[in-house]
Structures are given as structure tokens and as C-alpha cells.
Amino acid sequence: MNISFKHLRGGEEKANPKLTAYQVELAQVEAEIEKLLDTLTGANATLLAYANKKIEELDTRRQKITKAIADLFVETISQQQIDLLSGYLDDWENISFEDKRKATDGLISSISATSEYIKIEWKI
Image 1: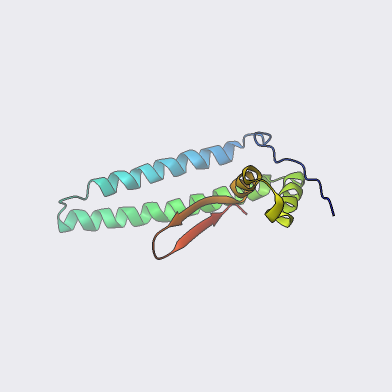
Image 2 (image 1 turned 45 degrees about the vertical axis):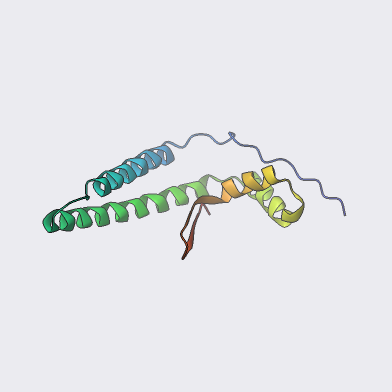
């Protein structure tokens, strides 16, 4: 059976202002977390307690923003994109590495890994 698949195409989506705003806010929250973490070297117990509380608040906000981004992404995915991704997933073993990369990029927000776990944040 010879199946012909269309190529995934990037850059066809229109910019979503809400999505862009969330992405900017997420970058700001992550930068603030990094800044706090960088200042902890040599900190006393009071400063550590304050920083821990602030980082927990920022992390909660980061999780809410990440979920909002994922929800918006799901809302903006077109039926054509879903059909294209489904086609690629159905024939995963036979598609090119570049098409696998594009399909994966359309499905996964981020991957974090340590020696103990792998965390995948899905866009769907």
C-alpha cells in the first residue's frame, strides 16, 4: 500500500495576541525565578525563607501560564493540522527525520530530563 502524505507547513498560523502575551509573561516569570536563584549564594536563613516563598508563588504562576498557553494552542489548532499530524503519526516509521521533528514540535511544548525522570509538556 502506497500512502502519500502532505508536508507539514510552518508559519501558516496567525499570531494570537493572547498567546503572545502569555509567552512574554512566562518568559518574565522564568527570568524572575532565575534571578532569585542566582542571588541565593551565601544567603542567610531569612533571605532563603523569603526566596523560597517567592519562588513557590512564581512557580505556581508559571504553571498556570503554561496551562493557559497549552489551552490556547489546542483552541487554535486547525482541523487540517490535526489531519496532517494524524497522518504522520499513523505512518511514523516511514516518514523522514525532518517530518518527525516538525510533527513532534507541533505536539510537545518542552521536555525536561534528569537521571531520575523525564517530563514532557504536551501542547495538546
